[in-house]
Image 1 (cartoon, helix red, strand yellow):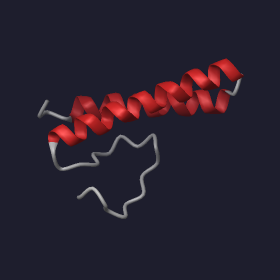
Image 2: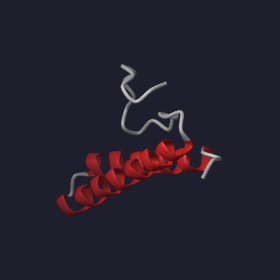
Image 3: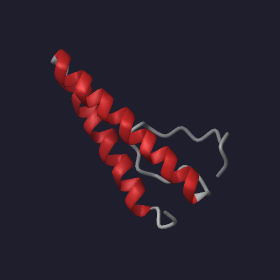
Image 4: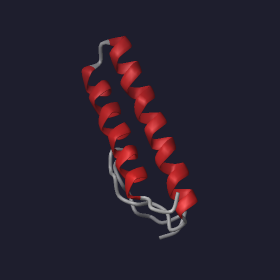
Length: 71
């Protein structure tokens, strides 16, 4: 699996996305940040759907980081 694979994963997928442990860790951290921003934006605007999506995305990033044994 490379950086430019055509595999389409939902934002809240906790599937591994990179072969390199460092790249996987960085990507998972970015997923967590993006999820947290959506969670906060949804909370501030009263958009429950966005808030829930952000929570799922953040949790998926946490799960990916836990699975990544290289870092």
